[in-house]
Length: 426
Image 1 (cartoon, rainbow, N blue to C red):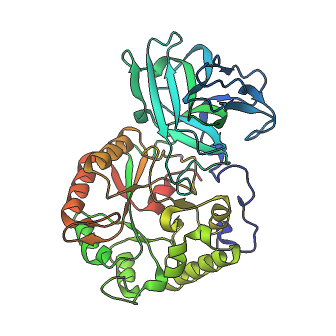
Image 2 (image 1 turned 135 degrees about the horizontal axis):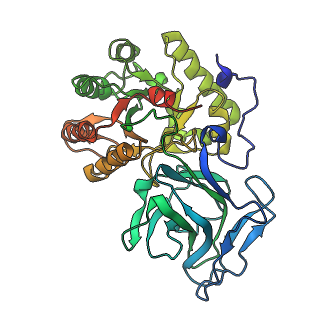
């Protein structure tokens, strides 16, 4: 067992006030514009009469991600509108090789969008990234009451004014929280410009194909389609279901063949079907530990050495992240309501975003293009493969072929989750 596997240790993030994340030292920010200092230079834009956010302050000392303050944006709930905090740099900054990293905490579900606007000092040229709220805030990256870090690649920014921001000469930053017609509070710790690919290890971008829930068609159909192209996937299995119904679930022998013959990574998901149906947040600490120990014992018994996990149903919280972080190096959520792809230095190792293969080919292709252009990683999540039709999780063979063709055209490297993790400085 490695240091992440030690069951005798207390959960590293169970009581943390921010989401579990990678070490900041390996992120290598080029320019840090934090808001936890009195002289930070961040300023609240003048209150808008329509929403009245006079309770907002650039020096909120009751809460901070670290340090002694943060920026608090709070509306009085009279109507919907934008609340802004701004900073003007003393000289233009060359952010050509950068992504944007934002530190944020939402206090309620009333927010609708968070916007990051970068441009010249005059505002004549600007690009904007929009982060929209996901309705189910247990399976998403932004969860109420938690400090989290959002990595925003350049491809997520779209031209807003003029010809778009010249990334070689950024001088103004505006961070906006859009309030609903009810009291809305969002807090910011700061913003950083960070290296897109600090160690030059992901020049082509990468795509990871994950296969959840031990569907037998992952062996009969997905394996065949991937091996024909020389690719492999990461299985996120339910070992307790193996062999229970050969027309629905994989057998242990099939999983072994995926690993031994075809090079698949055999990751971790949930041991039992009953626990999978509840989601990890529905388990007690001891039940979750028992699940993790059962998965580790099964993996060890079959010789599978994987550092990757995915949340059943995609639901997670600080408690589950804390326990999972004792056993694996990364964990993946189920959907991507925010921004695809993940950066090569992910902000949140235990809530990495994925894109469901049931999304449109246009959306999947866009995610792959972003991964390639931003030297990032896009994770595609698959379940069952059917001959025709499809539903929320299943796709048909024709759609699978379209997706694989899009991957081939993207120029991205096709990796297992563990291979992708190896490119990160952990």
